[in-house]
Structure formats: structure tokens, C-alpha cells
Amino acid sequence: MEASTPNPNPNNSNSILSSTPVWPTIDGPLGLSEEDSLSYARRFYNFGYALLPFLWAVNCFYFWPVLRHSRSFPRLRPYVVASAIGFSVFSVLLCSWALTFAIGGEHLFGPTWDQLVMYNVADRLGLTGWS
Amino acid sequence: MAQFQRPKTLLDSLGEEIIRILTPVSICMFLVVLLVSILNSSSSLSVTSIATIAYSETSSDSSWDKFLGALLNSLAFVAVVTVATFILVLFFYLRCTKFLKIYMGFSSFVVLGFMGGEIALFFIEKFSVPIDCITFLVLLFNFAVIGVLAVFMSKMAIVVTQGYLVLIGMLVAYWFTLLPEWTTWVLLVAMALYDLAAVLLPVGPLKLLVELAMSRDEDIPALVYEARPVTHHDPASGPIQRRIWRQRQTVRLDSEDNSSSNRNVNVISDSNTTVSIVQTSHSGTGIARVEEGQVLESIAELSAPLINRGMDGQDGMSAESLMLEGMGLGSSGAIKLGLGDFIFYSVLVGRAAMYDFMTVYACYLAIVAGLGVTLMLLALYQKALPALPVSIALGVLFYFLTRFLLEIFIVQCSLILVMF
Picture 1 (cartoon, rainbow over the protein chains, first blue to last red):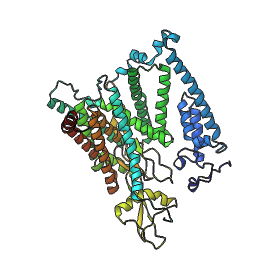
Picture 2 (tube, rainbow over the protein chains, first blue to last red):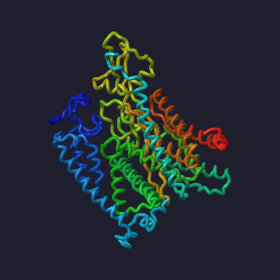
Picture 3 (cartoon, rainbow over the protein chains, first blue to last red):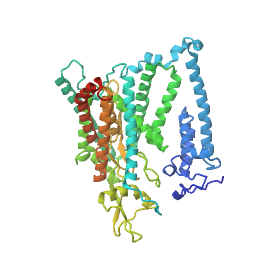
Picture 4 (cartoon, helix red, strand yellow):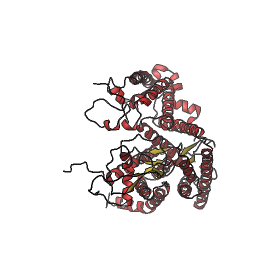
């Protein structure tokens, strides 16, 4: 696969013969050009560290053509790949914790399970009594 | 078999655009009906908010009292909304757009975070989902922050932005359905009348806002849903705004060959096809073949006015979010619909769902018909139009007709197994 040149020419975007994408975003010509994408990808990646793994997921989803076609958009790829890795790691951690909590229940945690589970917390803090 | 690609007919381009605006409206209504039917069967909640400030309905009052109370409530609400919109016009006039943007981001965060969180809590309590508070908080925080980013602050995948707009509309609409019944119906009618006045009267705040934005050639920061444009040649504009037709430039296209266009030289159809092909002609792949000397005017977008919607808050504290009502056309030719329209359509259908599903179907069809009529008028008049009045009028009419006339008929027929 050849590397694509950063040449956002609209007439190329529908060409069936080229196997490299011209547009780095999933929106194609409606999305960002490659220069803008770099700052966006970097910003999404950095902000994801503020406990925002969904931002990493959005980053991967938005720049899906970058992930799919390896060796295209060499400047964008590190950020998007790092976001993908970060999101998978975080989701594995979160899922394992949530599943342990849900399946383990009171056997595993004892009385603290009742203190942590959401509907009890909501009752205690009166959260659903807002309306 | 034709040699050249057949030029897109009016039906192809316009039909596709209509579908692209009807789908999110339908999804929003469907989600609200789902929420209402799942959550409301258990408990009855009452909301204290701006809209119930004058009178809180109890079931023991007489009909006339309820009607009067509902009227007072709606008048209070419309007054608050008018004042808020005028304040918005003032801010826009003083060029405090940064402040407006921050305020809107904050109010979306409140909607997504607090209202979304409360509805999630209702679900958790109803189904006893064993989720712990840490996971819940992380998920909610992520959801709210990315919603704010998607809608306001940064460019993101169009699907994500549109999805979050629909979600915000759904959350606010569900909240409105918690109002007492008479108040809801009178409020809907009052908002439809207000929308009509605010957009069409020369002194209306929305019209002022539109004209301000037009004269300054600026975007109004607002919550507007923009359908994905049908032609794929130009990048979409930024956050969706209600738009109005505006003539930015005139483009003269001469016919290149002698064969005349086989399209009708009908003014309306020309302007409609101009919408979808104006960008293609700009990007050089124009397929427009016009008669000699005919001037095609490219239509550009106008930013649309905002409406401040006072949202129901807790204990009198209200968070306001800026939403647009009405519809217009964007610079890329896609249709824009304000989020206020989503909300009030969904409130109507949600209220109908509280009675029975029969009314839901009737009201849904009425609203879609009203939306179609509004779109036709939009193509005809080519300026910003209020999207509420026609749909709400038809919806309310069909609700009461169904409830008081059709239901008896259907129930009797079903009981003796004549139909259905």
C-alpha cells in the first residue's frame, strides 16, 4: 500500500481504484482535513487521560480510516493507536471491576456491597427525590 | 440506456433530505415514548418548576379550575421564555458570544449529567441493576463531558453529534412530560403560538436575532440539529443552527450545449434543485443545465435565532439552555431543525403515550404530516419558519379526536371482533 499524499482533492474521494483514503476522518469529505486532524487527534488523546476513556473511543471511531489502513497518515497514527490501546485497557479494567462487583455481590464484599451499590447510594443521598 | 448519468430528480434530492430530518425526529419521539411507558407506570412524580409556578394541579379540582390554572402556568412560562430570549438577543447584540457558548455548554452539561443521571437512576431502581457508584459515576461523567464536546466545543463525528442532540432533546422532553396534564397541553399550544409570533412578527425576538446574525454574517451558538447534507462535496458547517434563506451571491450559469434542459422551468422546482446542486456547481462538478441566460441564485445559510427554554429544575432552581426552534436551510443545503421543536414534538407524543398507544400513533402521524407541510412551506417561502405551529395544532387536534371519538369506535369494534 502506498502512502497517501495529503491532498484533499474532492474528486479523488470517490475513486474506487485507490486503496488509500484521502480523508482521515470517518465522515470523509464532510470531516476534517489532515492538517486539522492532527491537532484534534492530539487533543483528544491528551484529554482522555482526565478519566475520559470514551474520548479515546471517540478518537478511534472518528479516525477509523487511519486505523484501518496502516501506513497512511503517519503523523496521525501514533495518537489514534495509543487511544485505541488506552481505551481497551481501561475498558478491560472497568468491566472486570463492574463484573466482580455485580457477580460477587455480598459473598465477596460483605456489608460494603450494600454501601457501594448504586440504588442504595441514591436512596441514602436522596438523589431520586429531586423531582 | 442513457449515456450520461441521469440528473437527480427533485424526488431524489428532496426526498432524501426529508428522510434525513424525519429519522432523528422519529427516533427522539420513539425514545420518549419508550421512557414514558417504562418509567411512568410505577410511580407518579410531580415536578416543581417554572411551568407550575402559578398553579399546581390536583385531581380534585373542577375542570374549569384546572383549565384556568393551566392557562396561568403557560402564560408564566411563555413570559419567562420571552424575557430570556430578549436577554439572549441583548447578549448577542453586545457580542458576548463567548459567554453564550460557555453558558450553553454548561447547560448541556447539566441536562446530560443531572437529568441523564436521574433517569439512569430511575432505571437502576426499577430493574435493580447491581451497578456500583464508582462505575456509574465514571460512565456518567464520560457521557456528559463527551456530549458537551460533541455538541459545542469541538468537531466530532457527525453521527456522535447528531446522536447527542437527539439525546438532549429526549431528556428534556421526558422532563416536560412529568408536568401535570392540563398544564402540558395548554403549554404546548401556548408555545406554538409564541413560536409563530416570535419568528414571524417583526418585533419578535427570534426575528431580531436572525436579522442581527444576518447583518453581521455570524453564527449564532445554538442547539440545532442539522441533517447530513445530501451532496458530498463540501464540508459541513459547524454546529447546527436554524437557518434562513439568504442570497449571498448570484451565479450565472449558461448552458453549454444546445439541447435544452428536460426539467421543468418551474420556479419552485428550480429553487429546490438549486439547494442541492448549488454546492456541486461550486465544486465544479455541476450537473445543472439551465436555459440560456437564466440566473441561478445560490442560497446561503442564515443563522437562526435562539430560544431560551427554561428547563424544569429542582426546588425552583432552573437551568436554562439555549435551543433553537423552527427550521431553515443550511449553507450546504441540508435542512436544519431547532432542538426546541424536537422537544415539543416529543412532549406531545409522550403525553399521548400516557393515555394509550392509539393516541401515540395518531399524534405521530399528525406531527410528521405537519413537519412535511412546514418543509413544503420552507421550500416555498425560503425564509426561517416556525416549525411548531402546524405540527402542534395537528397533533393536539388528533389527540383529542382520537381520545374522545376514535377510541370508543375502536374498542367497540374490537370487543365484538369486527375489526383488528
